[in-house]
Figure 1 (cartoon, rainbow, N blue to C red):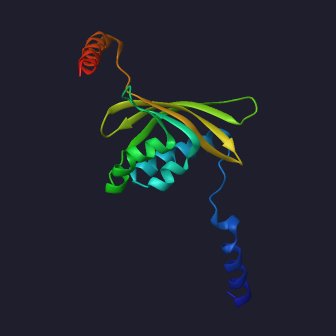
Figure 2 (cartoon, one colour; figure 1 turned 90 degrees about the horizontal axis):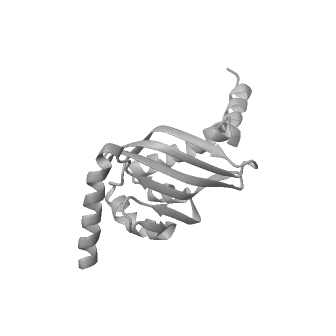
Length: 166
């Protein structure tokens, strides 16, 4: 291989287009890529990457009734987990994504496999800003089969009464 050819190949490989992963082919693929990497960032305890996917005014709804957090409140709560290098691991088993007519808003629901909660469900809203999808709201829940609901309802009511009595 000539020096000129080698130099040209080196320059070509150094261009931003050669180093940048290909852009997802569809809006759905772009949203899936964001959500998958967001979950991956948590499993790798990468706090900056994880919280970088939120809008500044994002809301996170956790499984406990008291867990309605702004992005910054959620980050403060989660920081000890990320600092220890032991955040959480959620993997989407299935996901459905829909879009507003103008393509600037996406909403989704996903079935999750989790290491600490078992089967779970996430849903949320993303907004597109400057060509980038950001999470504006996320709602984590634990689905309860209908035939188990009466028992859980009684247990939740008893727990609420106990909490109110404190």
